[in-house]
Length: 371
Image 1 (cartoon, one colour):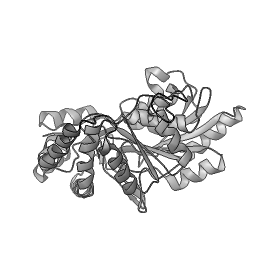
Image 2 (tube, one colour):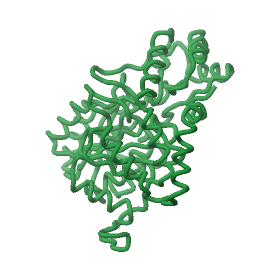
Image 3 (cartoon, helix red, strand yellow):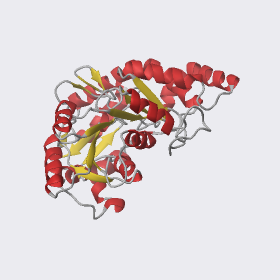
Image 4 (cartoon, helix red, strand yellow):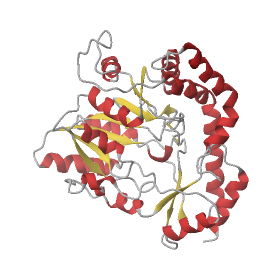
């Protein structure tokens, strides 16, 4: 059993993917070839954003977004503490300060009340360099953007949607990567829409941001790559990865349906000492992970060991909240982060992908329900 079965997906799409790759090998435009522009256009149409700018990976996408928004040294950006390290890392990489906020206990996404508390506590100290909020769509579900956007407008803050895990999710029909001033995603192989290497993208409706992003991703280029008008990055999506993503995007809606069916089955058939994932009203999740929480009647380590003994893979996202990681130990904290700390010691994820068989799901549920 695989935690994410990329091999099964490839077998399903083998002919189409192989043909796409062969076409790239024939024309030989391996960097920024025609498939890259085609992918950007199709991603833009799918999300409903005016611009899609692809890049080398999801972490670069975050840094590019921060650069386009003008976040710089001595600015501060709010990020949730219960997320992958890259969210805060990108903030630090541009010389800014990550300001950590807590999560909602049901969705694991950024808490609007914690966001307000952190903003007010930060500004109460007389600090005026708070520039933006980076909200993360964790485990496939969009954060509470109706509330977060209101808060950002009230406090005059820019908003970045980190949809590395959220691509394919939606709020009342509005798709992930369509919220905020700029949104980003990742095409890491394990993501809902993943390539066979690294890749990422940035989305925006703002023409000025889009122009900056296209420049920043190619060494700050102007009219051509030797006309360098600003300090940028080397962050281009290679053409073979774009070709693979085009074929995966073509079947992505069907794969989302399969993920939803798997999640619905889990919700109805896992019982006992676990808190199951909860969707907020109006949300559709892309189910990047199916994440449960132990409730105290069974220890997480015991649960993970029992799954392993039965040949069932599992994962913990994330065992350490970012504010407790070595890189950020000692960072100033402006709001209570106990929900992030609680989640880090109690959550775990079980296999979730579009090619998950009912037999495997029955084995997983049976193992969990026996504890």
